[in-house]
View (tube, rainbow, N blue to C red):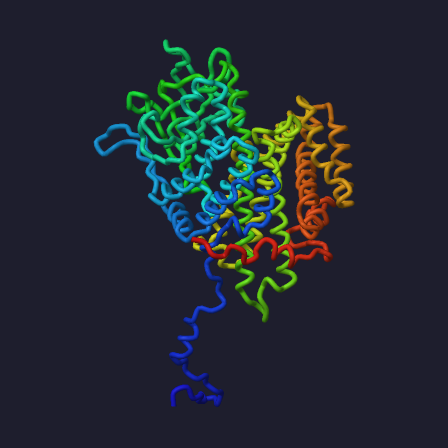
Length: 573
């Protein structure tokens, strides 16, 4: 009979033949995690909602709810996946040989951009111009970048271009209404003929990188006032289909900032020649290119020779968005890891209920909350009503958190990916993309050493930035003994900053890390539940190099996980 065991010639039992029922059982999909989609990401993000209220942006609650529902919707996830899987393609010439220099994007990318521009992810700070406007705008950016990061590059540069353009009031009057429009138009046309435009940036060249004073691109004046021709190249020229770019070029006075339009007012193409697209580790939906300028027409922004000072206003805002982009992906890593742990069972229990896993998840949550808290505190310091102390805080604090938060991103993504096991390493699960994406924000807009040098520059040239920083973190004194001891150490560091530049550089990374931990710890002690601040201070302020999950035994890990991944807002559009 089928399925009956027999014996072989030696008398040993022979296993029964497999049946169709065995195959049916093997084909049954059990104990796998369902996709986390159709979630209101703003309603579900308790630390973000609290920070929005704390920093004067309650007026934007409805708008942020709209952004959260879009970011968590199945259609936005589908657009993000498709844009990643079908990256942009460069067309240097048309089929008959005319130079066109166009980048073709998948329609899904344009859908993402339409949603982001429509929500003001690039412009809410300038359109609202009220207390909390930068907070609300950073929250929108975080929510959307949590799902799709590539679009954030042109969104960030467009947002950050506005304060730099204000160095040239006539240009700002012409371009700011276009840059702050909520209409997305990807066609290459004269900017004056479009309902809305995007702005890119070109700073670095192959021979110098971050050392932009070594740039060799040359600008020569034309007859029109403020008009120049640019000849040279840029090694990184992201979002090359933007409508205009702020670029640096050399004049007789030194590095100078220019606005270079993609299409000239008469409808002809400006002579910027796209050489190739970068083959990047991540950020695949966004095109980054190399470009040559062949007597390209541009207009002066700011004073000749003051280009670095002019464009640094743009860079400061883009660095803030680097913190936001990392915080967004940290949040994605947290919710995906915790979602998996709630639905996956192993060794007789849900993963989320097993103490070792709970500790890992809680630690990932603490890192995410610290990044979000720092981001929105800094965003508040960029608002129109910012005090002088806040303006000094943002000068130092942006560099400090850009260094530290962005460097924490890759290890955070890896730990979350490991929670998913083998699935986490597969490209059709969400955290492989997050892992490839996370190193980007640490490298772009100033890699680690460049940022640490900027921290030293701020402290030595404008000592009031250090005073503002200490005033901010000292607000948390008395709330946690470990933090108090750390703040004492930071104060000694700032008072005893080495006068010798070489020695200061040798200590710069240690100093920057301590400053970042002080700011994050102070914000959590003041504003987060005790279980979160105790976990942060107990695991990060003693100088130990712990891996994620090595929390003090006293930490209420389950409460932290519940705070970050409750079922609030689980139904979206």
